[in-house]
Length: 187
Image: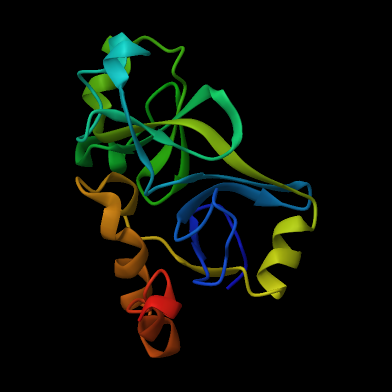
C-alpha cells in the first residue's frame, strides 16, 4: 500500500529510533513534497486543560495531550471525527477531512462553533514529518508497514495496545509480529 493521507504507518519491531519504536502514525498528508502525521499511541501526562483550556471539555478520553512526534513539539494539531449528523452533510467550518469522517481541526476556530460537530477529538503536541522521498526510503528499508486506518484508531480510550491491535488485524506475517516481545533477547 502506498503512504497516503488516512493510512497508518506501523513501526516495524526492529525500528529502534526511540521517537518511533512500536508506534502507529496516522498520515495526515502525503505526497511528492513529503509526509506529515501524528503518533496515535503516545499519551503524555499533561492535561489538555493546562495548555488548551477551551478544548478540555471537547477532547476524548484520556483528556491529555498526545506526543504527536518529534517535530515542533511546542505546537498542537487536533484530529477529530465528525458526528454522524455531519458525516453526510456540509463539513464543519474549521475542519478538513483526511479520511472517512476523520479530519484536522483548526484550534484557532471558536470551540463553541465546532464542538457540536465532533463525536471524538484528540490533540497532539508536535508531529512526525518526512521530506520528499524520505518516508518511501524508510518503507523500502523495512522500517514501516503501511496499512489502512479504521475510523476508531485515532480515538481509543487506551491506545497502549494499538500497535499490536493494528498488526493483528492485518493477518498473515504482519499479524505474527504483534506477538513479538519488545526485547526478543529477554525471551
